[in-house]
Length: 160
Image (tube, rainbow, N blue to C red; front, top):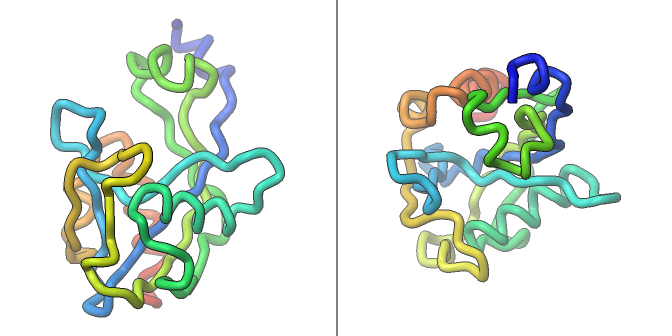
């Protein structure tokens, strides 16, 4: 696809979850589908007629096994935060229908225990996970998503 064709594509509507524990560290998972370090927080697409908050709670459980009764929703981003995929990835992800994602992020406080996190879900996305101090988060993320993570951390800073 040419850069001009990619620029005409829409963004995929998506949610992201910044899950923090009692110490204020953020959950990150190592993506299973990458052959290099690709840590990220839980995220995923919004289904037809699904509210973003509901999508975030669903995605969190689908990817981490953490159910809604184990979290408190603290905040959400005021707006949507977009990112573009690198051009070479566009034809291979989401069947080339999207240039990237436009995300609504939610900050959730985890009230459970680590043994209640289970990434061995029906469709696992992560090979391993850990709690990461928020000030170390952005450098661990793939470069094309770092600006999104920086914006999310900045917006949620007063709650962290």
